[in-house]
Amino acid sequence: MAREEANKALINKRRIIKRRTRTGCLTCRKRRIKCDERKPTCFNCERSKKSCLGYQDLSKLPPRKRNRDTSLDLPDGNQQQQQQQQNQQSIVGGAGNVVMSLIMKHIKLLRSSDLQPIQEILI
Image 1 (spheres, helix red, strand yellow):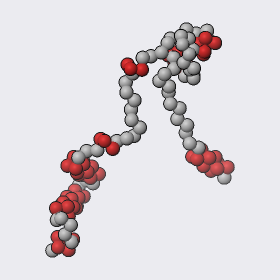
Image 2 (cartoon, helix red, strand yellow):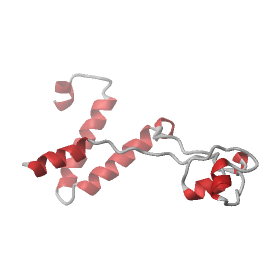
Image 3 (tube, rainbow, N blue to C red):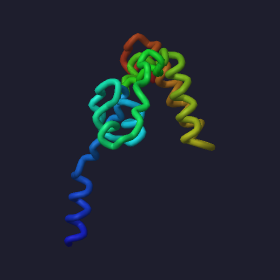
């Protein structure tokens, strides 16, 4: 019983993601500690008597990646349809391909029928 409660507690805890700073001195970044960015030598380097390696030019850094914003990278309709067909064919093998091809033909008929009732298409 205690084991189940411990497992639930672990599941409920959220993992804290710590972002790496892009503006701290190179020494603090290497040591993975917070930099006060004081110049010419930051407080951490001064206190630990390490040589402060200075700061990287931000204009030379590669651009940051977007946070899961893929709305601009959507394929057009034809590419999306081809991709779906390939995915369906790879998932369903053998005799299932016949069934999938019939379903896909039916879907194409529905799309091209300009929203006619299904009964007219099936007749």
